Image 1: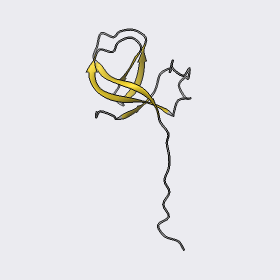
Image 2: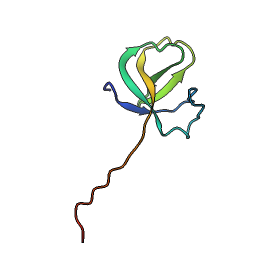
Image 3: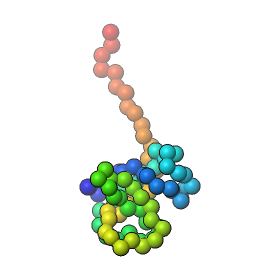
Image 4: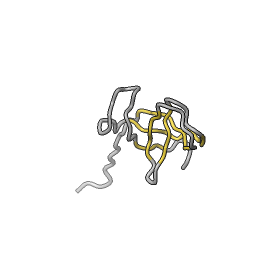
Length: 82
């Protein structure tokens, strides 16, 4: 896992009031920390890493992240015409 890497959100997003399935424009960005999450923080966990929100302090260590909104753009380049 690299600092700045983005992961999908699989939890309720209190900041924007959105639930699972409505949040493809939100990601959790890894901030480089590995420690016990504190209340109301985002962390990354799982065999396929995903972002989770915690309401309480946790007793185990996880990769810590922050919620970000992303804009996905697509660049199309024409390389040959017929």
